[in-house]
Length: 461
Image 1 (cartoon, rainbow, N blue to C red):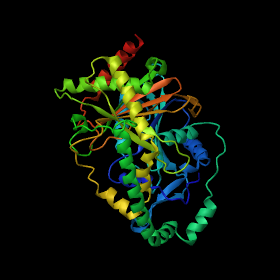
Image 2: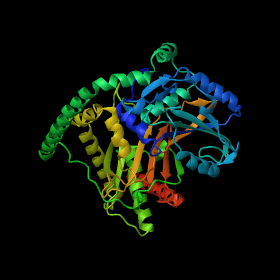
Image 3: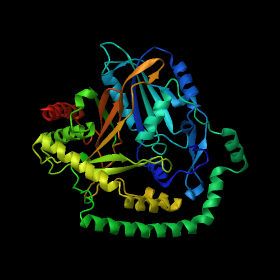
Image 4: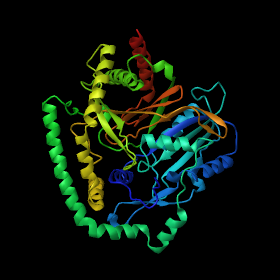
């Protein structure tokens, strides 16, 4: 689908507007073998590749007063979309510090919705021989442009030497129309007379959503559907409601075979290990928890519609279950139940109601929502985002890829998140934290590494 000239969907516009209040960009890390090719040539290579990736040749246009939804418009690649970071050579811990600073930034999608950060000649990276340099590429994407699956697909197109031809954005046609009538004004002119229709549609779909909720409750009472996910009081992992002032990150890179056990997915194995590590971490701080919940995004298959097609599932980590095997089985069963309920067709009614809301009303609600207030109950104490990014056949400047990583956003309510990202025969578990809430991320990483080994050993026995 060619984005140019289309409006952002309400869900994607929500991500765009939220980015002005709190960082929510996606960060996809790829570690390549360093070949020493000059950065100017790397930039030229990227510039050539994006001409065949229309999604990377757009930016956002804001209609006046947010009367209409923002619009995707074509744009050209500019040199500062590929940024080399200083120093030109560094050790892995030094890179980790720089990465933490990067994770607190946010792109202005009205300028450009993506940027590629390059860290050259990094030594000591996981999976590299002693003294062997790595080229670490971090693709930063506006969340309005992509969710986790789409972002991985864009990165794959960017780091594939030979990609199939894709339709080019028809810049000449769109630019000629833009000169005649600026598209943001055209969208505004169309939105004003349609406002009463949109309001009526919102009311109608809102009533349909209410009826769907009633029907879901009936199916739940009859035992045909699992009950809604629980909530729980916040704990130290949720912080105090203030926005993070700094960010830290760590990565645990494993051969995929080390995390595979019969009967369970890597996601369940990792979630079980996270449950143990979090439990022990809070105990070590004399702040034990009675319950730990994780938000696990679930992709929703769609050929069109929002760029962000996923739902957050709340999964119990069953920290009161002492037997590791039983705990893993209960986590797997709860995740399956959450998916079953989320995939029911009646769940679409709520989304359809949101899709009908006029832009100025949704914008007002997003900008007024109290994101810096810690609620009395939360749907998750941490995030576990899991995406497999395909085979390890990517390259950059003829350097092959070794592993990938990703870092779900932390905010005023979620102070520690986990990314589980597979590429070829490696799996990386990434940690992203607010040091004000998690001041000793290395200690937690050590606990998690030990818990992974413990869970795998127990399951294989």
